[in-house]
Amino acid sequence: MFENMTKLNFDFADYIRDLQSHPWQIVTFILDITIVIFLLVYFIKFAKKSRVWQLVKGIVFLIVITFLSNLLELRILYFILTSFMTYGVIALLIIFQPELRRALEQLGSSTFTKMFGIDKSLGDKTKEDIYKVVIAAKEMSKSKTGALIVFERDIKIQDIIETGIKLDSEISPQLLVNVFVPKTPLHDGAVVISNNKIISAACILPLADDKDIAKELGTRHRAAIGVSKESDAIAVVVSEETGKISIAKDGTLIADVKEDALKRILIKNLVTARFGSEKRRNRIAMMKEKISNRKAKKE
Image (cartoon, rainbow, N blue to C red; front, side, top):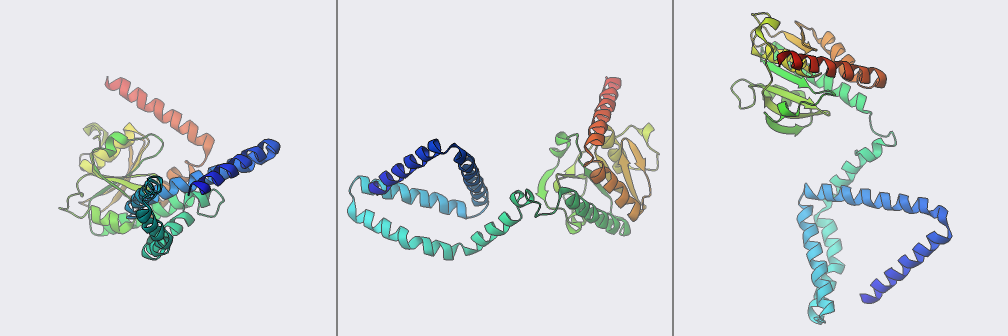
């Protein structure tokens, strides 16, 4: 074991000397280190979310015990441990085959592949999420299920997110519909969507003043207008009384929006505006100025 460690040190020293004599190889060295760090970080993140993490801690423990048994010349224990480690690798590959397969699948769909344009763009993903929300809104409109869905944009609404129940789940029409089923724990409040995920449900939103909204509209509509005034968020509302869909944007409520119009408005504001860099910067600056002016007037 010590001979192997000495050999490793010798090889590493040769590698450093080789870099000194061929400076251009530093580029490959940096690339090498970057890839190793990426794979290591990815493995740790994946392991912590599965039973593999317990396995990793067990392997580290065995390695430490094996090293100590060799150091203290506990030959029988050292023989047993080294024999186990030799055949244990094959056994572990068989036992944890599902986890290894899932890790490779996730690696194939990770940010690493997006860097090379293999995966779908963020704009396309956002469009898909918008279609899912529209499907859910349409279903809830038919059944007259009250709903309030907020899209966070550039101005963060973390204080509102923290008032709800954290979900951090993928967007799906089925989940959105189930959240707003009457008399269920999460139906009362708003769902917040951020970074292409349902971040939180049952969130409490700031209400707009009564003078800003027609009397026939209820609390959900006032909350939708309120959050769109306090930030650049866009809120989709489904009325419990009429089943009509409305959108709140920049403190204004667009009432009785049809399916196609809902798609167009959301795509325009969440996709087109987001990925137009100059327009986006100007819009953020204007919105921040508006919010600052409103807060100054309140004070």
